[in-house]
Length: 327
Image (tube, rainbow, N blue to C red; front, side, top):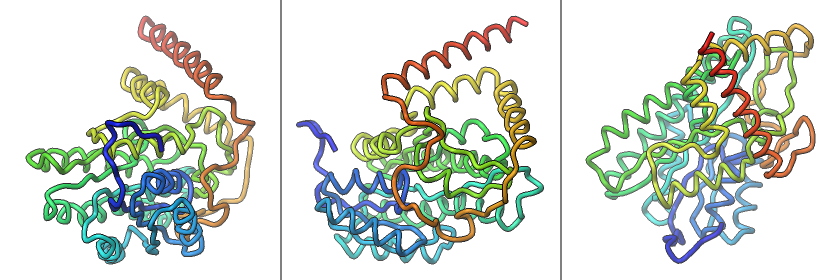
C-alpha cells in the first residue's frame, strides 16, 4: 500500500474484516496487512480462512482468523472478544460479508431469501451493535461498510439482495446521525459497482443463468484500496470510481427506464438459457476458489481501455436520457 509523509501510520492498529476469505474481503485484508495492521479475519469456512491468515502472515502482519457467521449475534460478539485480545482495542471494523441470490422472487426458496437478509442486513446490524459500544468506550474508531451501488439502485431479479442493500444504507445513515456528536467515531459507506471477484461465482442462482463477470467490472484490489483509504481519511459516503457514481446519477434521473431495461434484458436471457439452480454460498460457506479474482466473460482490458469504454457508455446513456426526457 502506497504511503507518503502525510499518511498516518497504521502499524499495530487492529482491524476486523468480515467476509475476509476471498474477493474484496481478501484484498482488503491484504491492504491492511501491508500497512502493518493487526488483522482479524472472519468468515464461515475454516479452510479458506486459514489460507487467508497464512497469506497475511506472509506479508509480515500479525493475523488471526475467527470462524464467524455474522448472522449469528453470539458469534459476532465472540469475534469482538478475540480481536480485543491482540492490543485491547479495535481501531477499524470493515463490514464486508455478504451473499446474493438471483432469479424470480417467488422461485427462490424462502429459506435462501431469509438467509440473504440475515447475512447481509442483520450481519451488518450485529457488527455495528457489537462494535459501537467498543468505539464509544475507546473514544474513537471507524466502522467501514462495503455497501454496494445496490444501496441506490435495485439489481434486476435480485429483490431480496436489493432490499438488504437499501436497508444497510438507511441504517448506516441513521447511525451517522446518532454519532454526529462523536468527532472521533466515524461510520463510512462505500458504494462500489460489480466486482471482478469470486462473489459472482459463489452466489446463489435460480435464474437458469451462469453469468461470467463482465470485463468492465471493477478490480477488487481497487475497491479494497478505497476501503483502506477510508480508515485513513474517513468520509460518510464514497463512490470508488466513475462507473459507480455514473450509475447512481443516471438511476436518480430516470430510475424506471434503467430498472425496466435491465429487467427486460435479464428476462430475455432467462428465456434463452437454462441451468440447474444452486444455493451457492448462501446456506453454506463458499467453496473454491478462495481467491481475490473470479472468472471473467472475456479477457480483462487495460485500465485505459476500460476508462474509455466506460466514458463512451456514460456519454451514450446520457444522450439517451436527454432524448428520453424530450419525448
